[in-house]
Image (cartoon, rainbow, N blue to C red; front, side, top):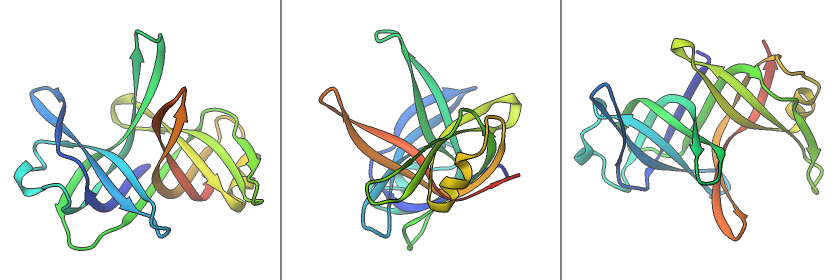
Length: 194
């Protein structure tokens, strides 16, 4: 599969109505997954009404989610700019007793030249935008942060290179114009050309 996400974490928000498509309702919820460092990634998940009974999944219950990492471009008319929305589209959801699993596997094509840098602590990082194909001719645009030796490897690849990556979905907060925002991306620990 070219796009697979497996998460186990704590439901940290109420299910809210996100949208309807062909008469089917889709709900948005936030899943909090702890890293080994103790930091929590708060990951947006979209789930069909067909998969859930909302009363079965209260806030703070633990669930396993399987699905795909997807993107949607939203145009802000007031600011005349586009915003990339990232979320996990759930294909399976069930309550579990264990927690904290965050795995993602993607196959796609590099969309922009990778940017490579070294952190103040000497760790290599490469930023990559991966175009991941989906059914019906759609494509998801997924930002990836590649670490370590894999970052060095990816930095030499060109636009159009086919890449397979493994890692985790992560969220991070940052400040812009005095406002706290959240960025979502894939933290990659393994990358290879295909």
